[in-house]
Image (cartoon, rainbow, N blue to C red; front, side, top):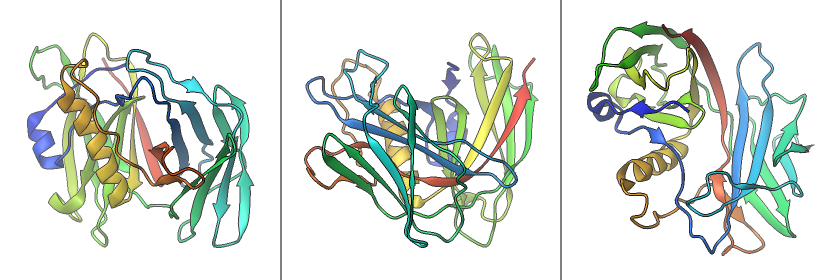
Amino acid sequence: MKNPIRLLIILLLFNSCEDVINLDLPVDKQFLVIETHIDYTPELTLRNYVKLSLSTSFYQEINDPVGDAKVTLEDLTNNRNYNFTHSNNGIYILDNFTPEFNRDYRLTITYKDELYQSTTEQLIPCVPISKLEQGDGTLFSGNEKEVKVSFTDDGSRDDFYLFRFASNSFLVTEDRFYQGNTFNFSYFYDEDSAENDIIVSIFGITERYYNYMDIIISQTDDRGNPFGGTAANPRGNIKNITNPENYPLGYFQLSETYSQSLSLH
């Protein structure tokens, strides 16, 4: 896994921070963890899936997969249901489906006779990454690899973005600092851990999801000492309808997304 290095100037502009996301959870309480990946890129067929697991202790990095749930995506606009099929390791696949703008969608999950249901969400638009290149800047040790990212915001609306730089490293930003303009920033990888080929992705997200991710990233960044206690778990937009006290962790989001790859040297 790549280890991102924090760039304070960028964080002030973004009003966010970046770090590897791992939630601290009580050892004696297991939560249903729901990861949704329902995305849209024009002219591409993307893999839609939901990953279900049960949270484990802080000291165990891998959650226990859940393979005996029923997962359904509801198209409330057209009154259609799409059922996911369990593949393996708690991953549920939805083939031959492409989300569309201006439609209402809801995720429902049945697990151990309890019904989990999300709020109604729509596909959120995004803009592509206009330029991705390696720079020659460094940060603290002088051994970092700089990646320069550029994109042009759509000035006709208020936008919130999620960037993914590694499998579990994220950064969120809102366009109030660069409404309708081209924005450039740098992201630094540790040279010793950075892979030669990287993929950077941008997602359009809602303001509520922006706030949710910002809290998670900030909690992880502020924790410092992993033995310093349990951070509060922010509630997502999915509830346990049958047993509200047994709430899940996770968020249901549909995003237009764009990715670019880059070979580092």
